[in-house]
Length: 154
Ligand SMILES: Cc1cc2nc3c(=O)[nH]c(=O)nc-3n(C[C@H](O)[C@H](O)[C@H](O)COP(=O)(O)O)c2cc1C
Image (cartoon, rainbow, N blue to C red; front, side, top):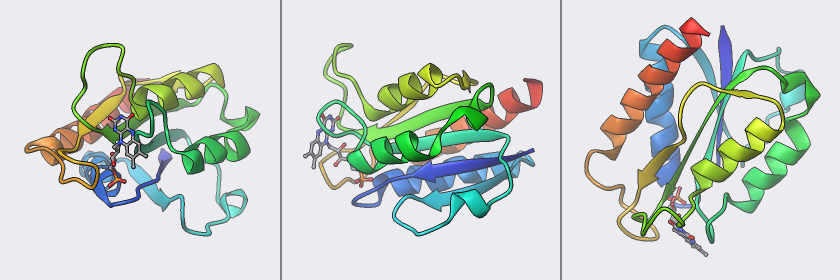
């Protein structure tokens, strides 16, 4: 089993979370390709992936524009039925109406017919540019391990 973990990050916080999730997966024996949305990788040239993990910072209660474009342009019918998990970073949640990128990405992927294996992971930053709140990298590592376990069962 091999998956794609794609992320967008402006100041590096979502990138750090992505790296920890990838570490959690790999520690559990799950193969994953880590892809920075800003890099010019040709996904069409890659072999098919079995699962998708996608994450970005929160922008005005949503995912970032590069992540929106990525999902629109690259996540098509061949991904239907495949497992996914979503993550993101954002400021401390005010209340349950305060939506974060992770939930938006989760909803879009589910609407495209992918199957969630975990609840969205919402990493907290202490200010616009970070840093991540204490304990968030450990939580991200745990999340990667949980996703690996769920993938193995699905
Ligand atoms: C224009 C702008 C809008 C933002 N809107 C939100 C928001 O609605 N909710 C939130 O939690 N964080 C918001 N943030 C904070 C970002 O989520 C934070 O900068 C990001 O998570 C840091 O991740 P990065 O280092 O990977 O870019 C906003 C930041 C910017 C610059």
